[in-house]
Image (cartoon, rainbow, N blue to C red; front, top):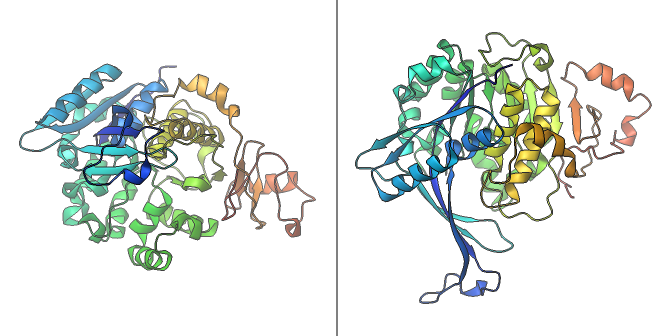
Length: 424
């Protein structure tokens, strides 16, 4: 069977990572007039195109990239790095604009500090995605509309037109989002009306939990932000909150919803009926109808950076979906890809081909988490749980008969479900 083809378009970033030396005095990092020794300086590609697109390529998926760069030195570096990957790409140069660039400071024992400049890849409009490409690929995946004023102004008209064109061309459509600062132009937009127009043309929607909360309920998000201050919002949102958000997204028109929940893993919810899913739809598509699954994250001994882990997880999920694996396997591949990402600074550098990834998935243990509700039960010994809205729920209940709600329905192996007491 010929492998299905993917077009990945959207944000493309030059990431410059300066890694502080292990013996450097961190107290002098931002001291004026002082010098801090670096262990290394590396450049790699980020954004949806640089992260998800290249990760799909490394997993063995035929992929083509579409994005924009400025007419500056960084644009030339981006083109060179793309050539070195061997991934086919159509990169448009925009005169008078800088290339999108991030300067990242990697400090031992801490996550990266990032200084970001938006640029040419944030100027997308619907016509920037070539019609002939949409007609020749099986799946069209677009990333980061909230970074692109041209897509969300005028009520999201250009974003709507882009996804409509992809669906009309017969491609399966997928979309990832990003979280804007509340003080930015995108952070002041009411995104829910835009999503209500666009989601009927999105087959696979892949936002993070915090992004979903902001995009769907901006007022509620702002209220919680004020309540928790510097706290982690994901720790405050419950499994039922995630379920309700996913239900709303399905009702709005999305067909498959994968919500990335950071240290709580990933939640998958699919519609009861999945019509007109495009050329990438698997032959055994019935396995994807009315599913509700939660996959725990992998235990990683040494975390270098979580940046890009969500994008890499998306690549793992889509690669498995395109090769017609079932939802459980697609989730496991997504978790594995995320783990490989956070072990280094280069988001997809450690990834192997999909067949090898599936063979190696068991090298990671799953994080152990407890859950006291009786509407989630373990569905495998690989850290996955099945929810009450899953088509296989009743069958799984019968198989686990004898476990009482008072016992908390707890997995005896490596299965786990997210809550606020999450630990390795």
